[in-house]
Length: 200
Length: 352
Image (tube, rainbow over the protein chains, first blue to last red):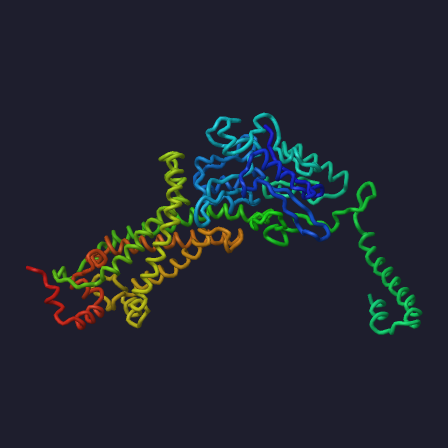
């Protein structure tokens, strides 16, 4: 089975935030929740790079390991999903996540967090709801993956900077690009997320 | 710029300044050309793409270099959420390892070790009896308000301890027994109980400090008490004031651990209000490590106050202790109490 990954080619990212908008629209993500974001390194300086980042769907996901109620788990495709029925909003997955992916709605006083929300790779939720159902959509968003489609953010990327799909395939695409143009700042987050880098 | 300022600043307006201007202008051009040549040297050394195009990434950032220079990569983001500026923080995996492996072993060793040590103490030393037996006469030791403050702190501490331990050990010990749905509901309730009980604990801690600070200042008699082996040698009893060195040690441990768990706890209760991701991770490490040591110390405190010593619990129970217990464990304090009261023995006499 294919191992699903994300890869952001920073040489192509133009910080247009179309991926962010596509994600919010596709999954009807509530205000204040940012499943995907674009971070610009060295903003305004020579050599600045923008990187689109969301849940990287890590190998050996630290969020799943640290979750005190074990509500986060990787699927057979390597997609990290979670069950909002079990989540207690403790916030530990955010401390463990190398990419700042988990998001929490503010539900009450202090810094009290509601049920965690994060990128689902547009693959619905990890709860008991039927795949593709209205209940699942309300809690987790779209199940494009179940319909054989890739995440909306990558599909919408105007410069094809953000790639989603089988890790071997998108890794090869990136490698070919680097070979052809002669440079590349690396597959951002891959070493931390997948314990392996794209060798270029 | 130099030519320009010379023209405007130093030279008077007129023919002379017009005549001299081209000379300055030529100088500026030469300077610019020199700068251009200097700038072109690194450009020539720059890597070129296979098609001969210049490499626009030569001055670009690279994640390996960035991660070698700093523990995490941060940048600019269009949304006001400052914590979202962190792009990659590999320390998350380190913290995960701490929480799942280090902390669990540390906690298990500290708590099981303490229980084992107390079990051994009970088997070897046994319950410390009142050597002279009960006199039947009572001496007031703690006022109702002192006992209220103690039990406020105690009940909130046990509540915080159990709900806190659930976060670290619940999924191993409780989850397999009661199932994911029940365990999740329980943990959700435990989270809120933990958050709100913290305030009661802090109030109790403040009251304890205010009431007992004076009597817990270390004195010379404490050194003698320690030299004589404290309360652990049955044959003799070392002199002690209102609190002996052992009790003073518990007091100061409670104060320091209490302040540490409170400070780190409020950082966790108000996430990212004053600190960044590293600060949150450090706060959690401090909170968990200190809290586990705190639990171990309090287990020992509970043992000594109940099972470990005859006549100790009633001090915090009814507030009155047996005269012989006071003589053996707090002789100097008893002398003061008796001196203060006019008819101490008669007042405390039982209605026999």
